Length: 247
Image (cartoon, helix red, strand yellow):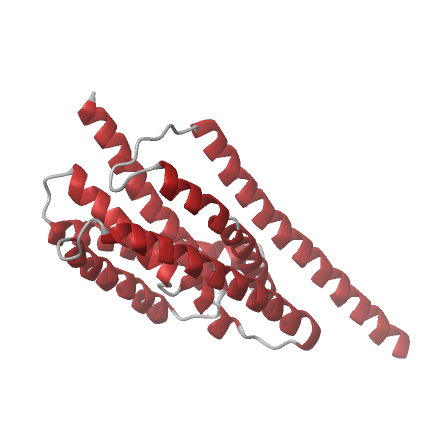
């Protein structure tokens, strides 16, 4: 029974790493990046994972709660940055045609303190649940990050190009969504710290609610992209009609 619970928690931690890779892939996929630059970003996550796995064996377990508490503050800072620059990215593209995606995507894709904290905790939990050395844990997590970031970035970029929604406005919509999602974290994590213990918290998982949550996230992103595409089509049609009237 204990082994089954450990396997479930281990799978959940690895799924969490994949979700972080998806977030990074969304930023890289919608931004105007070259494939080589996406690979560089994935390699940064690979290196960070190995470094953090090494720190798991150096930092005392009592310090991890302080690290998590610091992550709450960083959640708020990143959330404000995502909301502000998400709005700026959309506004500059829609009103002036300026593409800031190569700069503003960093708020969504670069290894921020929030992602680093989550990666550190993932390595910590895996080190407690498995007999694998910290170095190999870092390599495993890093490989998942590397493959996940490259796969999701290329997939998002290809699908966005097919549906003609690869533009800074769509990136801004995704940034706004994650910014609003991050704003909820300072309310959730303090309660988690008080009620649970690290590194192996005992908690019940409602998979139905988790599935509904991710379904809603996906639906909001798709709706935002479709609305943005519809507005741009109307704007293009209006410009054509105005040109015809002038002629």
